[in-house]
Image 1 (tube, rainbow, N blue to C red):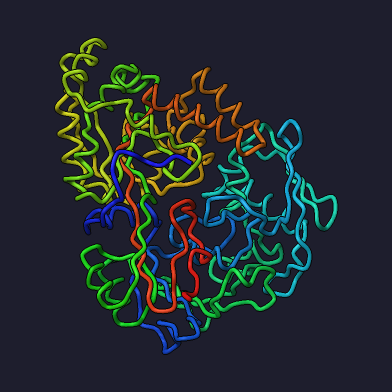
Image 2 (spheres, rainbow, N blue to C red):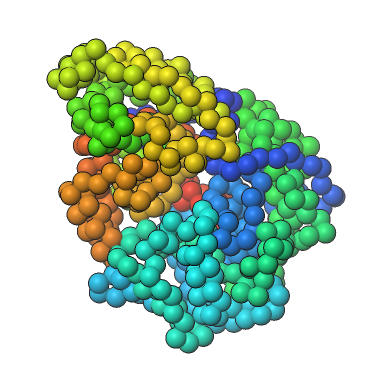
Length: 521
């Protein structure tokens, strides 16, 4: 496992940065409301209720519309997924107790565990898995792209699912541990009611009587769940609190007993008996140099220009001054606690404006060039320093405001040859596909390169996790060497937990799940 070396243990985030991280980890946000008198702070025998503040409102509980981010704490509790990413970042059995690839990595066979039931009482079987996957493949939504390699799904018997692929896909297993791998009830998942009244086979059911959509979601534990020991809380209350200061106030008031909060309140909470657990990297800030073929902006098609842009940033100074130490400098997109991250790559582009200008001149841009970049609410505080750093090497930036609801469409449109984003971190194969795959959502110009195509194909063919990680490291090396992006820094999350509650994660997994919380001894 490779860990970052460019800075020590991340310091706590300033408020503006915490807000930016929150925006990267949610789709929408709402306001919290007060709850009832159920136990939140725990007792001497351990907490019965986890009362967790989350940043975003679930957009929908329909299987085809589920999204990552903190709203996943809700739906991950209601639905089973075929596989599970544990707190160490390892794939484990979920609804599928085993899986196996064919030698050519184009057929994935999953064996389902027996005895599972939906909250409606109906049995969970291979036909339900097939129906859910078939629906996701054909329905536009946030999960359709992650299943683009699926050619067909078969259910030869009640406990066997066979997924046949158009070509090997190294990101598929990771996707099946997230939204793309949920198992829906075929009888209800296409109904309009599925958006607010989900039927799943997960460890909890949604208590509709106590739930206020957009504000608070109350979950009740199922005693018949196959892995109920991993979920020690009888009740889970998830309150949507988009403001970090409000989240701290909810903790002090006893309305919640876990949440991520404004850094300025951490010392006060610690002195009041709350425990703070710092997770060093949950999101990454990245200047994506998307038009690598130079179709819209010729300059970005020259690798010397892309390298010059990477050399324009003093990443360590950026972390220490602007982020007040609340981050980790990086030159790569993969998460620090993953198997692909290589600390040696962080020495590729030393901050050197003189050398950068020489590269610009060698590429024919001694006088620089102009570029229009999209401006999003969650990156606005970073725009002046990005503009100044690029201006120092002759790149003149104009920011074009984009409404939050149009951000995804704007980035996929191919309108912007380069853009600054902050994304929540994901599994290594998923990030490789997103940034370097021809159809990746962070590759809007669908750039390809013969060498990269071969490297990705090699990674996709590997069914052994160790060999796959080695192959993806070559993809990472290519991306840094060819400067397809200019990664800047990672930011983390500070989890605060009250009496009786403990946070179990360390950043190895960034998948939001109630399994990250346990009962304190």
